[in-house]
Amino acid sequence: MTTSTALLLADLAGVAVFAASGASAAVAKRLDLFGVVFVGFVAALGGGIVRDLVIDEVPPLAFADWRYAGTAAVTAAAIFWLHPQFARLRTTVLVLDAAGLGLFTVAGTLKALDARVPAVGACLIGMITAIGGGLVRDLLTGEIPVVLRREIYAVASLVGSIVVVLLHGLGHTGPIPLTVAVVLVFGVRLVALRRRWSAPVATVRPPRTGLSGPPPE
Image 1 (tube, rainbow, N blue to C red):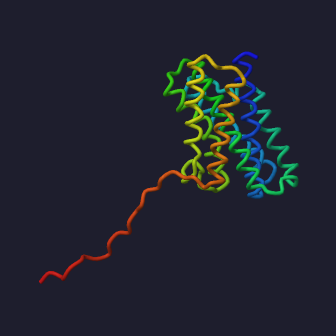
Image 2 (cartoon, rainbow, N blue to C red; image 1 turned 90 degrees about the vertical axis):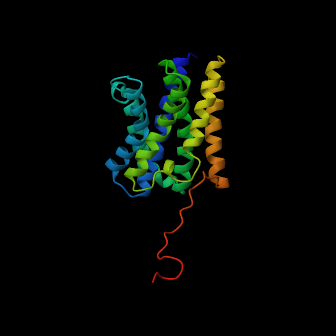
Image 3 (cartoon, rainbow, N blue to C red; image 1 turned 180 degrees about the vertical axis):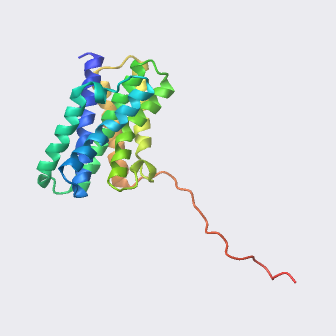
C-alpha cells in the first residue's frame, strides 16, 4: 500500500468517524434528519477544509472529491436511522470522537508533510485538522467545545502529530507505524477521560469588595 492510498483511507475513515460522532451528538439534542446530517457533515469536514486552505490546496477536498462529502452524509444519515441501537449516546460520542481525533491527526499531519510543510507547522496543522470538526460540532449543538475545557484533547492530538513527524523523518510511513500513531492518540484520549486527567486551570481570586484597615480621617 502506497503512502497516498494509506492517506486517502485514513482521511475517509476519519470523515466517517467524525460524521458519526457529530450525528450522534445531534441525535442526542433531538435534531431532525437535516440537522443530524448537517452537523455530521460539518463535524467531519470542517477540520479538513481548514487544513486544505492552510496548505493552499484549493478547492478543499471536501468540495473537490465527492467521496468525502458522500461518506460524511451517508454516515450521518445512517446514524440517524440506527440511533436506537446506540443505547448510551454519550459514551458512543466520546469513543467515536477519540477515534476520529487519532485518524484526523495522522491524516492531517501526513498531508502537511506531503505538501512540504516544515515539521513544526505539520504538527500544528495535524492538530488543527483533528480538533476543527469537534469544535464546530460542539458549537452547533450548544456545548462548550471540548478543546476549550480542562480535558486532555488538543494535547493528545499534538502528541500524535509529533509522533507522526518523527516516524516520517525516520522513514517509517507504512500502515503499521501510522496505525500505532492513531492508537496512541485514541488511547491517550480515552485514558484521560477515564482517569479524569486535565490540563492546569488558572486560579482566579475574587476581587476585594472593600479596603482593609481603618477608614481615613
